[in-house]
Amino acid sequence: MLRIRAFRAIDEEKTCEKFAEGHKNVLLEHGIVKVTTSNTEWFYNPDIYVIVIESENGEEVYGGARLHIANDEFSLPLEDAIKVVDEKIIDLINVYKKNRTGELCGLWNAKFIVGRGLSQVLTKVGVSIAIQLGLKSLFVLCAPYTVKMCQQSGFKIEESIGVKGTFNYPKLDLVATALKIEDLNNLEGADPKYYSDIKAMTDFPNQNFQHVSDNYVFDLILKLEIEVND
Image 1: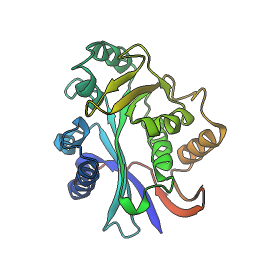
Image 2: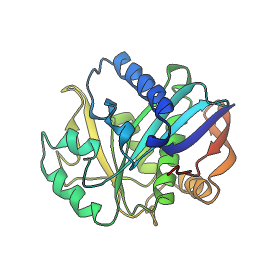
Image 3: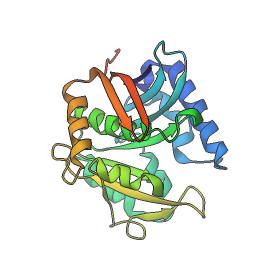
Image 4: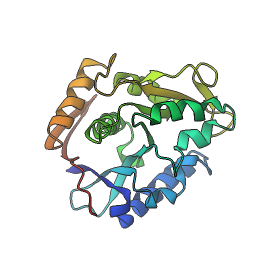
């Protein structure tokens, strides 16, 4: 059985190292050697929360994502990625930062679980964690094949930047799309099933959760309640 768990990055450096190594390997498999979400400075940012898909004993990490809360010391990864081609992203984030915003980023899955719908679960979990942490809005920068998944979770394309929200990133032959949830308390436009799952994860962050995707059925252990070690 797999477990999906959330924690603050600065509380678990060893797990962060496993996350970073797995993410780097997935990027290399796709010929991507440099991406703003793949550095390790985030290990030491107290406003970053990590979501991992791991073995039940926590020894192996098979995938995950990160939630970065915007602050005045660290820029969000999508700011660093987009400002090179459109500096309007900085002003946009500054506007939303006043009411607590963040970015869901760094989503990856190990090869043996790719295609089983766990990216959908990670996206739902990311939105749920953002709600748990009291964010008002949430951004994401995603590849074409994950746009629909994000939209089903309540994200909408941010057409005020780039070419109607799209950019060539992380390589010139790849397209990324910026999306945003305007109001995490509303999730307007979210698919009803996604909305139901996100609400269940938010109301009951620690639970056994069954994920059904095509021909796959996963029984997952969710441990999403954030335990902060001062």
